[in-house]
Amino acid sequence: MSAPAGGDVRLDKWLWAARLFKTRSLARNAVEAGHVRYDGERPKVGKPVRIGARLRIRRGSVEMEVVVRDLDDKRRGAPEAQRLYEETPESIEQREARRAEARASHVPVPDSRPDKKERRALQRLKGR
Image: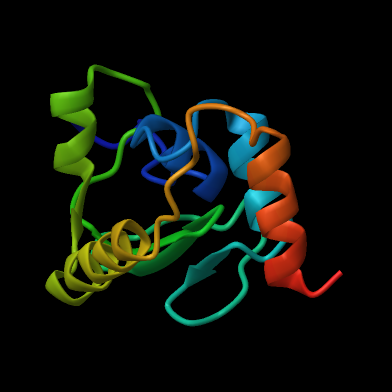
């Protein structure tokens, strides 16, 4: 993998090429909405990406921090795209902790709706 002839890769294009977002427009929207931080600052969509830059990316409830390892403006297969960045150990640890917390707080869903007797028991429990 290599940088394009000019040497600069736009942030939205790099995020797309690294497969962190499915489309360039999703990457652009995330940058514009402030869900992407470039070395701690809120960047513009066309900011040139540099090797060694730290990106903090939030997608839904998942937040990850990556370090740029290589530049490319072409979207390739996942194994090649993953060589463009390296996720920080702190970021991996935080994601795993959040995932474990989410699993622990999972409330089981009953298999069916409550029958009349169970509904009355729930109403008594709620104090109605």
